[in-house]
Image (cartoon, rainbow, N blue to C red; front, side, top):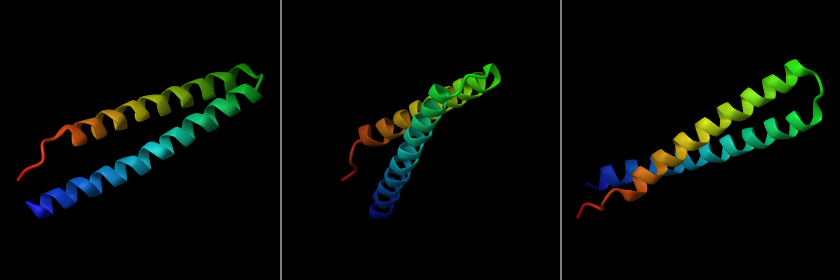
Amino acid sequence: MQEKRRLIEREKELLQVELSRAQDEMAAAFNQFQAVVEPDLIDYYTYAYKASMVKHDYLIKRLKKLYEQPEEV
């Protein structure tokens, strides 16, 4: 049981790191979107931002699920 708890804690840490990266990706895509005027680049950064949002939402759901798991005694 200790091993399982350690694995869950490690997964939480890794997901938090990935969540931070996704937030950085979202910020970068948004900043680039604001700086471009070419339609193709506007489309690109729109899709990049949306992809980062989807990834961010997925990671949030995974983390919630891990934090909602009951502690095994």
